[in-house]
Length: 442
Ligand code: BGC
Image (cartoon, rainbow, N blue to C red; front, side):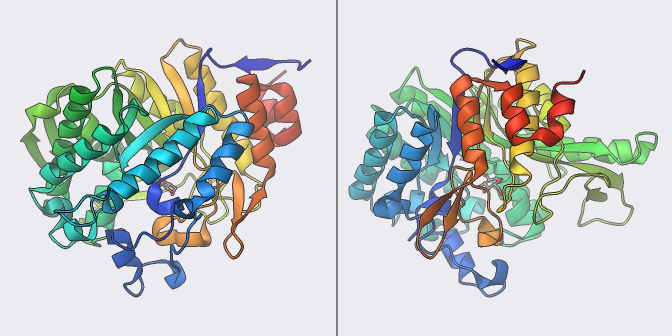
């Protein structure tokens, strides 16, 4: 018997998350394929290539592993450019392929959560201005109608758009994602069109499937003032929160999109989420930086004493998860952690990172907050966008040459947590002894 145990609510969903372009391989008809073929865009010129070869059938192995290891759900996504390779062409074969994957998931006991848009756009849309084009929401709507029409007998749990906040800031402010712009005007337009696309998708899904659960996945970034006593830091932190964390979600409540120093009323967005999806990874300190117009007057950095991930991408700060959940709680809807994880090829930080973040999820669930599930990012190492293969987020490792899956200790740890629906002192002692005293003081 364990000495102590943190139980999660009954019926809690335990899973991992993936995204089509990151695992399927062979997606050569979208903006990310175009991007990886531009010199200097992707880490060391690496390619997505076969990725985890899901399109070639290896989804089966990964989903069977997930199910065998006691997960009961999986979040995956559909690649728009496969379903609609040209504006006037639908590929029913691709939809049938997705049906097989989803049926496979259900067969082994994984409830599918399906994302309709996870960063990639078909090349034909990209070449026509992407989401800057005001016709994009309409195109997206047609695609959503097609997909939901084809899959509604299998799926009733939908994420319309993954991280519109990251899509916009990385593509139109930071420039790391296609189309690599730094243009606040374009950023606002894209955010507004994504909001319209989301709202229309929400309505279509409910039209076809009145009982569906529909939300979007929000990347919640923690922000704390660098100097809590210094008003300009406090003010600029608020500004970061308002633009990055609040903009899209507030518009789903009051219809007003306030972003990139602009404002627009999009009334059709009101009330278009049934749950709050949170992707939480890390937290920044924010200092006011005069004259830094391009960085919106902010200097963002990790707290100096942070425990850092392998490539310095993520600081292990579980209190940011608490902040994310507090933020999500204000919407008074069910909450799912739709992503959380860390890049760590040696699996030295992942066990404690995961346990510490889950402990915060447990604390909030035990305030009787409506937290219903957790999806670890990710089941297996996959293509990390502009960072390509330099970052390894999988519970399982991937040998790219052979496609062999490599079992990391975190696989067993997560399997135990899912099986017990709890974090027990035994699990912590075994997999993350460094944080034992933090979790079980006294
Ligand atoms: C994205 C994932 C990505 C992960 C780790 C999230 O922002 O939704 O696609 O792999 O972060 O970088």
